[in-house]
Image (cartoon, rainbow, N blue to C red):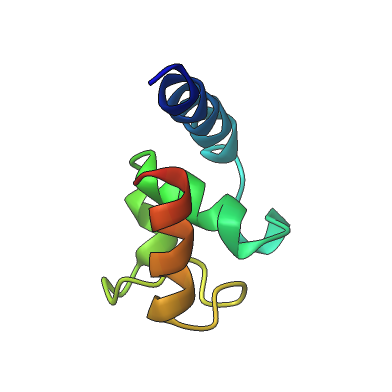
Length: 71
């Protein structure tokens, strides 16, 4: 339970700092997914479920990251 809370707090903190970045300045698909899950819907402009397509190769990769971070 505590581990889940800590993970969720870390994701929220990372999402808040990632909002200031663009896809071109992000360094990983995980960073893009964290921002997207944190509410930065601009990361998925075409609404296909893949944020920052320059970093995230597929919806399957995005889904694995979402499962990992609890989004």
